[in-house]
Amino acid sequence: DVGVELDLDKLAGWEGASIVANAFYFKGDDITGERIGDFNAVTNLYTDTSFNFYNIFFQQSFGNGDSFFKLGQIALDDDFMVSESALLFINAGFGPLPVQSGNTAAPIYALAAAGGVLHYDIEGPGFFQAGVYAGDSGAAESGNKGFGWKTGGAAGWMVMAEAGFSYGEDDASVVKVGGYYHTGDYQRFADGQTESGIYSMYA
Image (cartoon, rainbow, N blue to C red; front, top):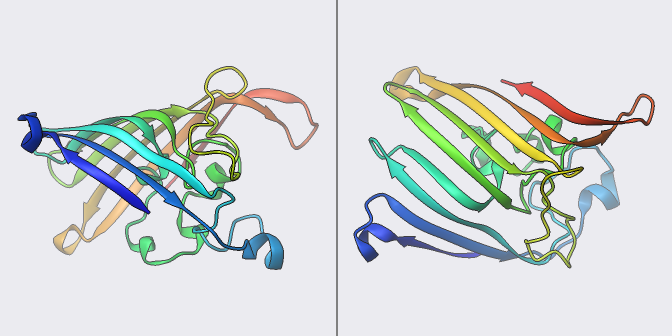
């Protein structure tokens, strides 16, 4: 994994602005597909991609510095459905929830896609954030170098929203509530018919 972050305040006097870009190469076997076969992957490290460009975005901080927006090619699981304590584990059950990762092709590791996020830090221990992303991040395969995403039409758009607040000693605990709406076309499991739009809530 290799990346660069440019601080535009130090480079050009643009306070709170930065540019982030990274890419990675992955090689390894799929223990889930070859040995286990569960719906949710055993490890959140495995990918069928090999070398691909990942996050490439512009970010502007404002207010007390904890509020920001970013635009570019981004992965939604960097900002949404994140459990800080679960980052200790590599089990994919602690990454994006299966209601999202198992139902949509929206951008999560190992593929990012076009999108934008606004994160607003509420005075006190709270926040609200919302994001819009390309609905299809493309196929997770070695030929996808990170730019195979699609938007609109059957691919749709992914809209995310999340609010949370911290509590307890040193605000060490957090409660988050969020949801998404994906505008793309889906095949219903019940009857095989195509319908537009899918949504879910989480806490």
